[in-house]
Length: 619
Image 1 (cartoon, helix red, strand yellow):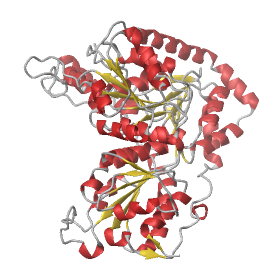
Image 2 (cartoon, one colour; image 1 turned 90 degrees about the vertical axis):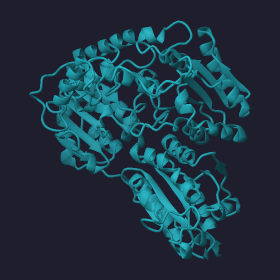
Image 3 (cartoon, one colour; image 1 turned 90 degrees about the horizontal axis):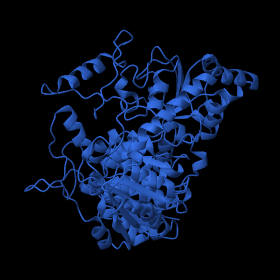
Image 4 (cartoon, helix red, strand yellow; image 1 turned 60 degrees about the vertical axis):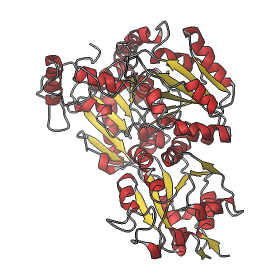
């Protein structure tokens, strides 16, 4: 039977387990998405208000379920609007398929409406190439079945990532009788496993270590390694720390969880990782945020610490730190093999030998909780982010999903909002995109309709994607939007004030009197059709307002005014971040930067550098 290209794509998506397609229609893709109504696919189409959001929705769906879906947009601006979404997925190694329209093959290069053609025709695949694993330019209908299974292969093998497919207008309406491929016969069976020598070497290091530590990156969650990881940590007595995307790989109320590492990190997380004699990393790229910009002794000390680095991408092995044992394999399988190679007697002796070490880590965790308490127990409105997040955690079930925007809400959630299950903390870890959290919450709720979903977001971030509230109302998607409103890009302001001594463009203020400016978010939500929308006016309303929103089972918004007081407003400043300083910076800031730069380990061995504690940005 002859099918159009759109019908072939719809049939393939359905066969590959895709529950819906998201995107925005235009003349460049209407022939394609029309086919999603056909009996061969019957795929729901979730219309968004901005193409960036479509990609974020698809991204979040993969993060929550491990199942890729597709986003579809038009030609030209419709396509280029997706770049931030693609870059976010690419940096965080999440899989999705983006299908974009393109000028007809016989019209290419003639400057048709919305065509980019001055470098190459078509140009958009060249724009998408750096932020995708693979881009396909389809010029014949009979290519499409082949491209579909190749796209899935590229997305899901090795390190996951986004893939792009360009479809010219004339190709979209062509027909062919080539059927879609059986995906089970087009994907490799199994995941890469480590060789025995590497496993043995890792086991010996883990058993002989006096102060071992496991660092959890996003790869630990992608590989579904939580059961094996938890068993190994408990069996051997190894404290675990996590990065932005590793949050949730181990339950944060597990005694073996020492908290987050990097910048902003935590006292127990950074101290444990920096003073370990052996570190095993699982799917961690050691980015600057996760490593305190490689300043020795702040988050890591590699060397002298010995590193066992496990990553499915061999290019990451030894990239930022030298690895004593480098293992290019799937994290879950590596952990299973390590567990199989350790006897009960070996495990018992190793754990008993670490009892005093584990007591020290537990003591650091208690100190850390005491240090956070003044922020968590803050009285009054405006309040602190930690107080708002404490109230949210008290009413959100363990399986509740949070999506998190960039800036202070992202840092505070990472540092002080406990998460108990994998795939329940969704954030743009590496690209830190503003505009991600709101559509990601929609994608998370569509992926897991039975789990409560809360979007934790600042007011500046919220206004970059506020139009997607319409999607929640039109499709009755019951997401709770928790707006932590401090009237500005206050994480940027705090950095400016610390490094420069003044701010520009980072506060939302009235020009005539300098008073803070804010949108009326409750009225805004109601204008979009939200029946449940409230602004917290007193601290005793915090918990009840959030619970009422969750219990409504409807799209809901809760606005919480947040103080601008840098000493309590958001996360504790723990860790270090490399910011070259201006000549006008204070002597203290200059000295701290000089000491930090000298101690960075990624450029050359810094074992002889004087280790100096970083200066806190809050004094």
